[in-house]
Image 1 (tube, rainbow, N blue to C red):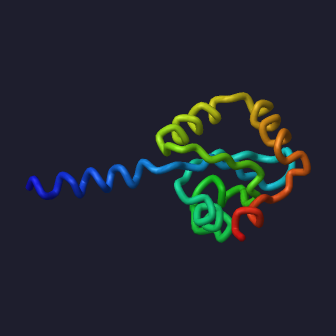
Image 2 (cartoon, one colour):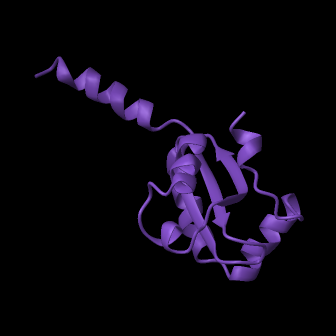
Length: 111
């Protein structure tokens, strides 16, 4: 049993790597979805391909309009929880500050 503990510890530490916060929409000033992931390219591809059932698929949220990297996934998860409680206008301002044309940023990360 003692031999398993280091393996579990390594597995937990590998999961604690950085994370990404992202915002998807279906059009400028449209519905917003705020998510968190450890692999941004894979996760956005899943949303775009329709692999993710639920809110994003139902509303066709495929445009990546905002993303940011945090060094610890736990901080990214907490930040997403905070952002989800912000007024809609705050999220719009956050997007407009870095992406005023509402461009789909997927091509910038998928290279």
